[in-house]
Image (cartoon, rainbow, N blue to C red; front, side, top):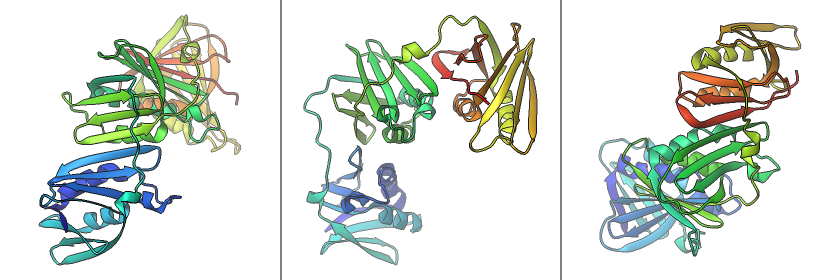
Length: 370
């Protein structure tokens, strides 16, 4: 039975959107496959790793029949990428194998039964449903994703806190050493809900969401599940169970010492200073004095780096150290021309970084000893 006839790029587009979550090694071999469902001209591609499931749709099916099968996702992707751009690609199901034909190229791929593919069961009831611009949601993820923990034993930190409030949405991420917060005004939310979205889901959403001003995404939230529906894509993800730290207690208030600094100038200076740090000790020293910021680093070989930047700081001197990676992470993700620092005359106090043109963004970094 012929399933698909379309240009190579037309088939690649929906397949590429789902293959990102397919792991190369799986406890269930079928999870290395992509599920293809045909309902007349309507084709669906599904990938699932038991935590997040992505479904994309396209209209290039051949005939009116219905059919379904699964095939090695990355093999199919690699074959399609290697085929010439010109001419049509034809996919057909024959005797338990998927044939791929383009010009004089022929491939026969082993399949596994679609009935064995473990698709996600949708929640019985959604606690919240609303829509917002894709661009806004992508921005909220982009502004905090870098602060998520990686493989932390505190599993609730290996994700992003998604806070729904009437008229407002917040995103918060922390690894215990730094915290990033962002937010936006959104209509259609009736009550507060706090959920933790897994790290992998956040990264997939960043990849899939559009920056188009008019493109919208519908979000449905249940007790253990979240669903994003946009364009021809549906992303269903499990939520991380656990109690996220109270971020409102972490974000400093009442700081009275502030200064602004060029993001690019600070980023460049920190990148140069980071060259002489070690993998184990990524510390850089920041010394604030009258209208001057000194940045320095050193290593076990007695090598040193020193940088100076003029700043609008006119308070008592401050000498404090930070993990340079935490500072470079935020400077590489925000796009503002300047960042605003708020500090306290205490080497043990966290620094608060904000943006002059974004009242919602807050980044808190704890100091370190070097």
